[in-house]
Length: 375
Image 1 (cartoon, rainbow, N blue to C red):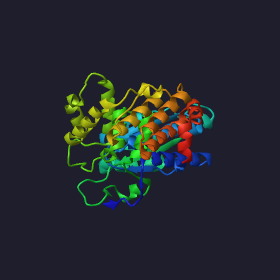
Image 2 (cartoon, rainbow, N blue to C red):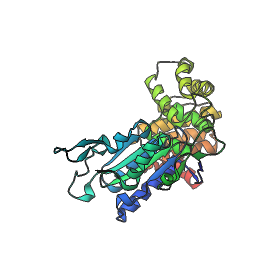
Image 3 (spheres, one colour):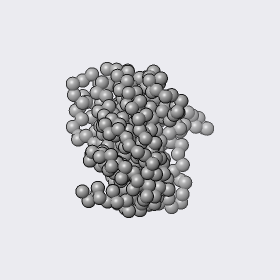
Image 4 (tube, rainbow, N blue to C red):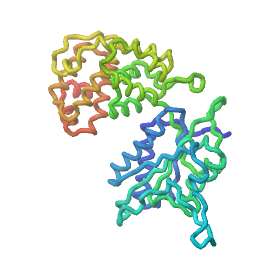
């Protein structure tokens, strides 16, 4: 076994670093097959797969080219899935290799190399693959080819693995010759990265509010001990569940079995209690139109309030005006909202300014925000 002796990194910072690495290599003219593959170590459900999709989106924006992610689950692969099946040629004097599905990508979709599609081949669960599959994957990772089959010219390779369970150290069981082919990243849960991603993806405000109130519940330390435990992946699933059942249940305890099946009974009970507190909140539309009269200002309710207001802004990003933002800012100020909650609200809004020029301009005229920025 080998210890994972690289520093921890959040998913948000990971996306930035890998995108910068790839764009830097391409802008410098380094051939893609010479660019070192990337290995993502991290616990189950931390967001490794989602980070790969975000890297693809960032590359598309940075390079102005189409980017496609090809997801290969090595635990479901056989040797023939990677190298093909040998069959006699038409003269029956030699052998040809039938091309596996993973190589059937359109690598010649443009005459100009600058316009060709970029591929990211994502080898998930590499550490759980059999030694034979890992050996076959080694040539793919190193040479971007296996036997007579080649990956497209513009191909990057990313792999993901989970740390070994049941050990006293954070370790991996992969062969040294395979590990040495990679640039390694130690991906760990980070609430700030999850919050920014959740705002962009439109996660349900109850999920964002609860985790803002108690971000220790973003990821459970009981991985491997309980069959259901909270992870960024399971919170995304709960967000989807809440959107489906929106308005159908007055008491969140009616969804207890669904919630407990995702995050475990203990965390589910805490989340249900928090959600029922959310019923005390004023109507968000009233806040932004200066009709709200008051609100309980306990920490749990304020967390729910900030999440609800953030979700409202995200939904009206290209139409909201400075007057509405001013109403919301004054409402929070008149509540005597603690500074850390006011900072949470404005930091949420700051993260959205790059997504809309209209919203950015409206924010630059909002007096409460300008006063907060100076402080």
